[in-house]
Length: 258
View 1: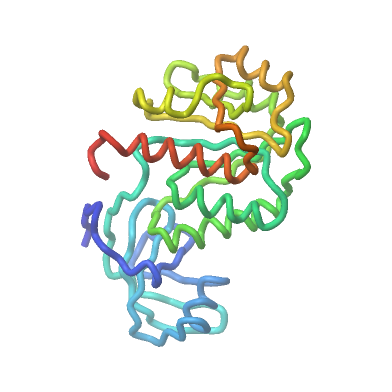
View 2 (view 1 turned 45 degrees about the vertical axis):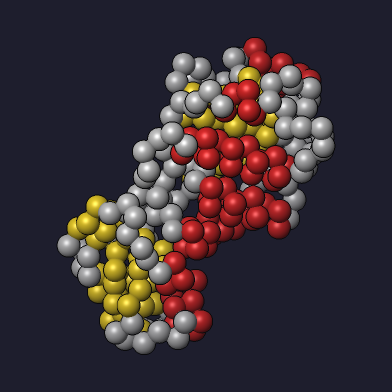
């Protein structure tokens, strides 16, 4: 059974991420997902849960067998449920330290951000590596389970600022609104966001201390617009979530409900 119901309710506490993508009438949970289902929820054969695989759909399922380290489930249907933002929003950000990274990723997932590009800038203090990327990918899954997203926020490979500004995704000046957070800017969020948004938005937030003047000039020369976030000094994750929230809310207002 396939349904296309954008407002179909589900029990957000019993959602589990499965990979690879579901293609038949059987799915297998392993790793942290299997552990949570069997040892935290203490599920038994016959228990009903909701699966998602990042494709945009949800799958009602029933536990069939519980083995050592894995759970086999019968897939009972496929529900096409769209909870994505109408705007494709990419956040390029110099990641903060420690647990603040996870918090940032969780909130961006909840807000509907499509992807995050970790930036390496002159003043960056965090150099993202493979292990950090794995931890953040897990944070995306946990946040998606909680908030009901059926597509995963993508954690992209880290890029230097100059390389990113010159990349194809950042050079589309005609179809993408590109904003760089900068305290010396004269433009405020309301100046830009109140006029309506295109379908693609790219945000850039620098490290503690901000982008250097040279880095800002590089972006402005490439057609980016600088945006000021107010008189107070914001942490990286605060600025990133503030901008992302303004974009997603502005994009949702005045558009058909998804």
